Image (cartoon, rainbow, N blue to C red; front, side, top):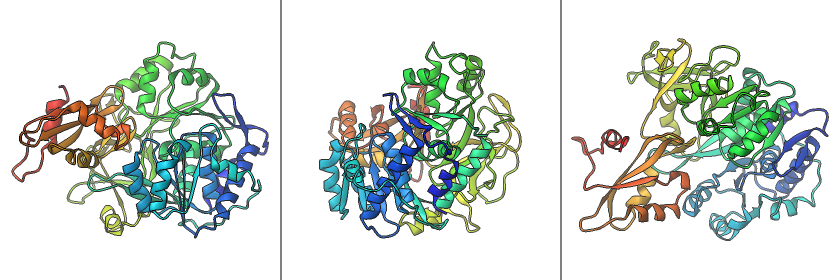
Length: 508
């Protein structure tokens, strides 16, 4: 069944009710949402794209951007969201790899974006701005506000999300209608979504957390969303008293706790705070309880699977643990010998379920590598059942993520893979080689640090390296610091020992 058909089962009968409210005082009813989505779906259908065509989107967050996503799904096409921080070199790769049938970008980026699109043989390029401007809405205005949802099979693709690899370029995780709809239905029940819930939505909508987990949750429950374009603590404080549910990365909570005005009174109407996309520190978990009386619910998921596990809604929530497998989801922890790990034994986390993706776009060999012979997806995370954290004992059925394989860095909820950044640094004039690592950061969880070796006789400027990177890659990937050294530590096999670098620079 088409994902849109599943989501609209939760739309309220009263179409005049508010679906989205913005800080600018704009109110969109459920009737507005459905009609705008239908107009956009009719526009997309008029392009007569082949079945399975990708619609690539890099626009700022707005209600209309959400409508575009819903319209793409409703029209039976495949949605391809792109982080708004991506620069031209990254966008060129995505467009060349995905070969979208149409692209939508911000009006300010049209000149360079359209050139890349046409280079990738994409015929249709539209623009969509934050203030309801751009050619997309202009073209859609002439179309009917009625549209019959295109039938799709469970395994048909609904979205492709690019997730970087520890080696090589980004991989497109292929998510089906069933992957996303099954997760939305499970979370509606598991998190006890209720009539009258209001979601405070401050997350970006180019990845799983904001686009699928948060938006789908509100849509399938028929809940109003207070739609903030970005994290703004003043706006959170203003709208928390009017909300019942908020989802955020740990940065949201550390910044709220840093605000003296944030207290139990502000949260009096709140029912549920959810954290994910990066580890939540025990200190933050405990401070939040002390300040507000609310216990943050931490969960675990990834681009390839949406949500996998969650702390209990009505039962125990444990600092440092990501909870139990969601209904229908299977999780196992296995050692390097492929044997199942017992309680408090650390191993590799593998998963199965209706939410688990089918593979990576046009990468059959990589897909095969990431699944076991018996069909379990290797998450790349390292974890254990039960044991204890700094907060105390953990129930045996609760999963703890204790590390990440390879060298993945998570900063502010974003996945950052060192190999990609290193490849840009290594191409710079005067650079012999580089190593990128993550070091602890009180706000973002981890910060990116680059250790760079100059070529013989060359002099490198750390500030100059950072400045050059800012013009090539997303800002969240740009190192906060660059350290110049004469050589990198290596083992007997010649492999750079990043563990030594982390030990040296964690407290530097």
